[in-house]
Image (cartoon, rainbow, N blue to C red; front, side, top):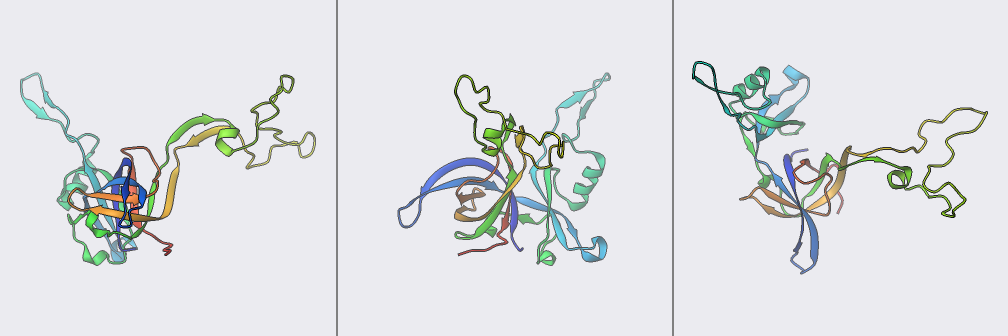
Length: 227
């Protein structure tokens, strides 16, 4: 892998391609990301770069009993993290992720990675946390069939028999049950980049991308390239 970037999902729209075909796209604000650490095989056992994305917001100015103003540290950044970012010479970041690039030696600390590393027609994999849907039954969660809807059935949306009676007297692992639905890491492979707006750090990706609006999305060069 030689290309990857962090971004946020802005929503979906549709654009026309060169042939006049209407294409549904997901708009991603990709980068700019900055290199916060370079890991080498000598020091860490593998080659990778660590990147940061989205600046932390400043806290408010606090006034103590003596009337002196004290500027609070950036929200949610502890002292080890502050030292880590200060050593790299970058501002404090909200998201930090790692990419195992084949060309790690080409990067330096505080280098910026922008949306222009991708081109129209590139194939990418998009990873994000899917929308959480709360506690759901087996019909919605697993697509199971409902029972008869007659008045006397008393069995409409239950998940069915859970296990045998006396042998083996247990419920097997993997049995479809109601439970928490969504809010898991999902990767969609081989999405095509329809348009790149390097000036505004935007990527228009064909089709849907996991996650709600404003969620963090990792865009990587596709590992299973197809035509």
